[in-house]
Length: 329
Image 1 (tube, rainbow, N blue to C red):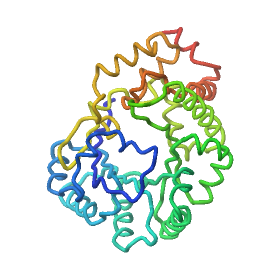
Image 2: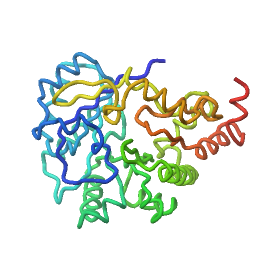
Image 3: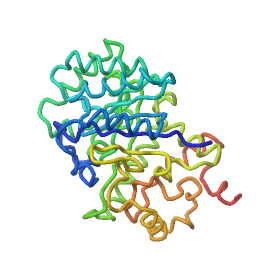
Image 4: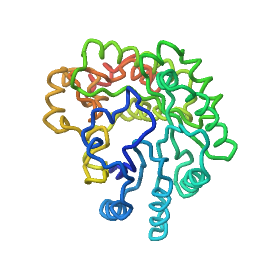
């Protein structure tokens, strides 16, 4: 079965925050963007060329320009009968959401195929670094819930979050802020200047944390659960290993293959092949499920959540690790 075509649209590179874990810091194409919002005619041309089944508005902070997104969505629906999956990632750092922003979020929810189409992110790092942000974030989550706008929350598993919040506390917090879905996300690092020994320990911690979260968060609320379950049960890779063939990112200066995290100077097939050789991927018992991991992970270390995979193998097949399946191939 072919992967759905996905188009990421960088509405703007502007953002009110400067999160230490944001991938914009090491993706070259973001620095080349102009400060203005993307041209709508350019977007419509890219949509006509790709015919995506999923469109994801990102930034920067895309909700700074609700008019741009409304224009894109309305022009699309006027000329296309088929529904697609629309989504948006916003930091919700607004003392008061404007009527136009609310209209944009409501319209997107109304026209999208999926029930949860609007996403935000939860970060203890960000709450500590930006004065007043936590209260603003919580107020906006409550207001949107009151308006019937469903919000999914991406939780980046940073060291600060893991050290300060237990999985049980995290789940309770997600319930309290009315999150309708939870996406557990590993922290992605640029290659330059990274200490591999430190990263290895961090990924091991995040793997253990993710495994415990999988035990607590209900399946229908855990965005990553189906990925790992399908990998365990059907023997398919957990993450996409060839996004460049079905995923595209549109900047104001051009259309590129691959997701936004992929569009930096180390993104090429040779880099992935070299990483696999350096990490010993081909002889690893988890390679059956990993296949070298997501294309955006280019550090010469393994960041695959092995303990989480072991847990899901036990859930799906009642076995204790990957060796059983791997040896049968």
